[in-house]
Amino acid sequence: MQFLARQDFPKLLESLIIAGYQCIAPQIREGAIVYDKLQSVTQLPQGYRDNQRPAHYQLEKNEDVLYFGWAVGVQALKPLTFAPRESLWTAKRDANGKLTFIETHPEIPPTAVIGVRACDLAALHLQDQHFAYNSYSDTYYNARRRQLFLISVDCAFPASTCFCASTGDGPSAQTGFDIALTEFPEGFLVRSKSSRAEAILATLPLTEVSETQQQAALAQNQQAIEKQTRQLPSRNLKAAFFANLEHERWQDIATRCLACGNCTSVCPTCFCHSESAEPTLDGSSNTQYRQWDSCFTLGHSYMHSFVLRDNILLRYRQWLTHKLGSWHDQYGRSGCVGCGRCLTWCPVGIDITVEAQAICGESL
Ligand code: SF4
Ligand code: SF4
Image (cartoon, rainbow, N blue to C red; front, side, top):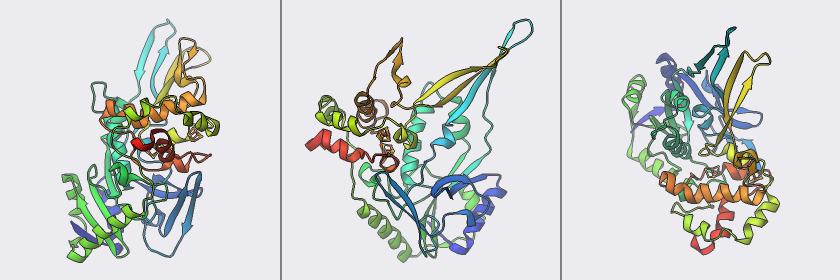
């Protein structure tokens, strides 16, 4: 572990750019924190907190110098690896009727993402399990994933919606990063996990970390854990959910849920998608697109002229029993990393921790 003084933080950005990375980092857009291309550290959301609660998000300015003194932005890393919409291939027909298929190959430059949260790294690992670490490895996901250089920053100010401590995924990053930072007003504690990270750090004026600074980092992490008031167990809830498929709470949720799909859009682990064919009007070509889908849409469960989940109760139940239950069979753990985004961005404030408690009751 080493120390980077605050006045030298811009040198990290300079080193990344010189090394050939495009840099992506949190910035404020339309009143919310999102990832976008970064040219200067002055674009970072310095001195901001995010006030989040179910169905509520508001940035508040304060006087501190922290760049990363907020909890989580609207999206995690998902849009950077699993594109919201992209073309997969195009078929062209020539004048003789001969068809040619052209596969789309995403061309992504080396990309350094600064300000990644521990919960986002955990979600990325789950996305890797789904898209990359299996026998049907996804070309499009991998093209983006292998270009990522990840710089995490430990979360010191969780929002009221956060519960990553209870799922074991935060607030401090333990794995999955190239460089991990712990931010203090005077600068950053720096850890590295890769040889390419070492190459970047070798260009920076790093100094030794004192015992006091190490203790301060531990204390900051402990305080961030204690600030979290919501919780969800990381253990397997599958049996509890499947024993309660007819629980009256499902109907209660169905009267509140709008089936808007916001929760699945912002969830960093949701991976469902649909495909659509878009032919040109003259019939000379057709492009196949893939876009994010949601288990809350009617089309998601359309099969052979039937919609299997034709009401909101069935769709919400599908989401929750998969996310917290049967996900264990597929990926060896729950599909929730405790980021709290689905609470914040649900327009009616449905809270996954409250609903899980209501349905699984004492089993929690
Ligand atoms: S289910 Fe909600 S809290 Fe859990 S990872 Fe998805 S968005 Fe975050
Ligand atoms: S739970 Fe909330 S965000 Fe999700 S579909 Fe229902 S209303 Fe939309």
